[in-house]
Length: 287
Ligand code: ADP
Ligand code: MG
Image (cartoon, rainbow, N blue to C red; front, side, top):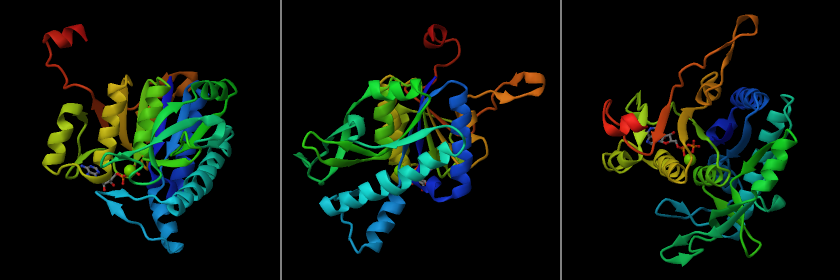
């Protein structure tokens, strides 16, 4: 199975979580899955900007990314976090390579249009192309690519890309069968309860009723984009629960005498393109 796995930034801040996820990624790769890991890192990015005395300005929740701010994004995202994560997976005996934007032109980007101006927010972009051949050659060589959320513009500049949107675009361009968002909460929540299934038609209502907001709303919008782009299966799960990634990926569990046990039911949210058809309806029969 071809699989895109997005690691939320908060998960990268805890070493035990990173080790556990690196082990699970390794298990999935050994089962023959073709995996691309995409990671965020907004919190460390913001903290580093603070340490360097660079002030962040936001317009409607979006950070204005001037050259100086963009340079810090490259240092933190494509530097420290990317190399740490590739190292954690490689340390499990599964070779991984940290990549971004211009490396083999793996991710091409264009500046985001804001208020009808392309590049109105500075170096903030969206993905317009993926070097699929490059990823396939890595998989053939048994290497897992680990991607920072940056793209290379036609002008040769690096653009910061929202990591959720980036993972969705990658899943679409790579024609992945599954996209898994690993985050710092157990899924899409309504109060304390996990909403087990969300369909794309409900996203607007969940936002209007203020059930979902902020980073989770962005994630659902990215999930919708992936589903509309042909990705069949999109899941949002908590990354800190033991075995969460394996069960979200549907991996079988080790059993006795070499026999494999079926996967545990995953805990989290399945995002669907359409509402589930009622049993017996025409859609349910043809599905
Ligand atoms: P990530 O690094 O995974 O992208 P974000 O912080 O961007 O994480 O998004 C997850 C956050 O979204 C949660 O920690 C929570 O604060 C916020 N959130 C808002 N509404 C919801 C909701 N209904 N269910 C879960 N999380 C929500
Ligand atoms: Mg986020």
